[in-house]
Image (cartoon, rainbow, N blue to C red):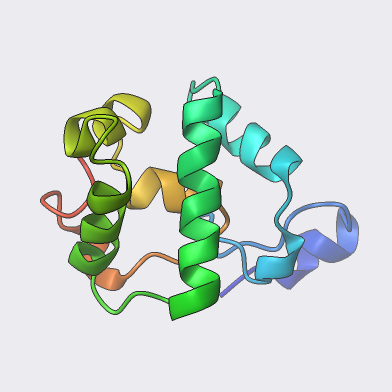
Length: 121
């Protein structure tokens, strides 16, 4: 649950849950993605933006993924020509499902906390 008092004091802050995922998906913007990437030490390139836009489009069409594997497979299929999983982990070293979804302002399935589903740690 978000600490509502911090948003009363700082109304410009993003409404996010304790893990940093946006509570209102309409609050996302490229500036939000850039801030989150900078905080993780990632400089967003056109390749990153392609992944983030794909994830947002996928979410708009399919809703929240029930399982991280579902999102991972969609990402790997879409970016197979660029190198698939290896390419995605190069762009998002903390996991293409976890990290990219956070940058894209999207919720991540609960099983994404399993390192085999979107994180190299």
